[in-house]
Image (cartoon, rainbow, N blue to C red; front, side):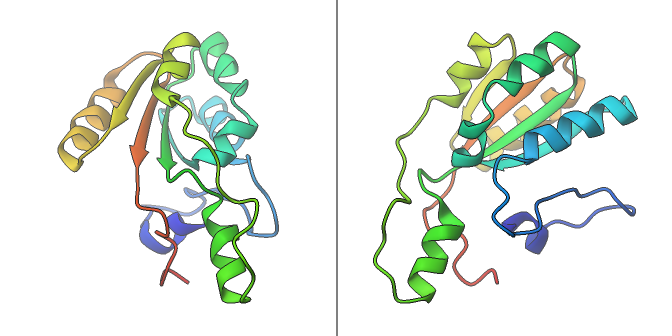
Length: 151
């Protein structure tokens, strides 16, 4: 959801995302289908909680040798749900999650995994990912509350 507020595409139907109607965990399956259908490298942006719901799909990327670059936004929370709770004046409940070492999981599943701490690393690793065979996962730490003011 946050991505749609920040990302410009160079053509129609180049950004697939959930509708915001309680859909979680769809980014990686959507990217997998896009990579299968196009035969081109595909960029996937997903939140940490959403990826945890479908981690097994990394094996699909491995088995099918798909060039998917998975950018995980790691804020250790269900960020959009936390935002909605605040907007409704509700207490923060059930939205904080632990921190998975996604880069290690990607490597264990046969991909290339990197934890990204700064923009320079993100740029370098993203450029390398588009030249790499197989899947790459870039775990990018972001500030909790990044949804604030985006909608």
